[in-house]
Image (cartoon, rainbow, N blue to C red; front, side):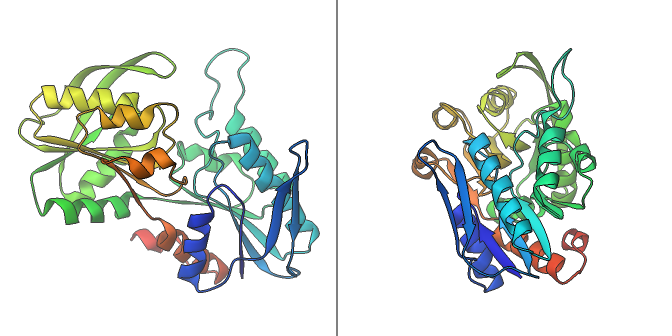
Length: 310
């Protein structure tokens, strides 16, 4: 087994290799003067089981191209099997036609990854579960829920909790976490007037005098979470925390979170933290390296991955 890191999130790849007690495969991933991606694998990979770690986060197109070129280099280097380990799968929010003459970009990216040479995909908390069906190769979709429930349990010591879904679409995710914590469930009913702008309407469920834990898969502009936190506090909540798997945090999202009623925004390291995230007082990361590392180990040994969540 070999683990190879592209450039999007090298600290996570190094943590995964440390968990597996193996060194990262030596490779040169660089740019020509016109920013073309060039990849050279500096070790023999013939007949090897290779795992390529690369989130397709900002800059999404550059990181996606790095992944595709690396997959092609490994295929042409006669690797026995290549697994694309994509902690954050970019373009996942474009999983359906939202209007006339619009693309389904998640399907396009799935085709590109498959045709570039991936034999299977390992990812974390896909934005939409049906994206697994966009691939014609096996996909293992891991969940950050157990990691969140352990951290919440350590932080609140049995305090009265209510798990909150910031929108109707995330109810299944929130219900799963509420079940793990043996907590009640509440839902934010919001109406999105245009892309990137959300308006909180009302709260379904009782949050008065309770610690609210919002859970979501992606935090981009943070507008939804911050507006929901305001609504929850106005409805009598004692405190509001948010747990998200992928902290995209584009634009002024970190400043928006810092100025909001959120006591904590906790996210995984599926996307490498920016300097703003590292300096923020109420934002922190949980590592998914042991989870991904164990899944990689089980895939290599042809063992069950789903049993990680039993």
